[in-house]
Image (cartoon, rainbow, N blue to C red; front, side, top):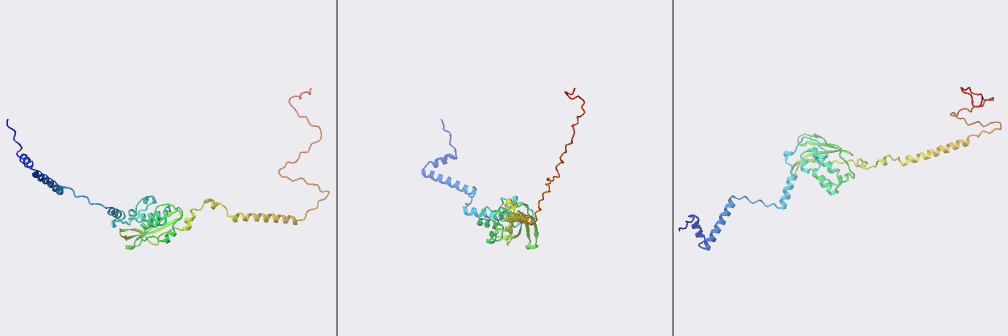
Length: 282
């Protein structure tokens, strides 16, 4: 019985590979080389290695950079809740938002002086110094309303005057577009605005201390009462005392509200007329 003929293509290759170990090694190396070349030509390029330093630099640039086309002179008034949680780069394109962010950081008393100056310096042209630290509020101050803004100046000297109402008075902030290493943005101009420390101190006064009368007003009443009593005693001592006479009768005390005493009438008591006879009279 005749055996079936082998595959005319694979049979010679199989015989050549199995002929010797050398041919087998050459065949394996050739297949690996073909696969490597195919992966190099048709495969995806390897992703670039991102070191921690590069990642931090990229994130910092993305966060703080403000393109010039994002700067706007449209005064869209904002409230404190509208800018809460936003970064300095997110508010740098708007004058009212930058001023409100400055005011929000200015009335924050939860941080140390160093942290407070660093946070406040994100919105100012220069880093705040000891002068503004000395004017920092020592008690809580609430922002009571939205911003009120207007553009002043012309050309490159244009700036915005923003007013933020607080419990201790209005905080007036001047902001202007300034160039920075990360691009143009709105920044608070120096000298930096502050609140009146006396007005801030009044917010911590207890109402009971205000309603309580002053010690001087309490002590002035007692001497006047004593003086009046002394004057009355002196006057009564200097007046002459009237002499009592034997035929003078003591007069009863007069009372305007008392009724006159009834006087009894002499004679028999009259019997009233009755419709029925009196029992025992018959």
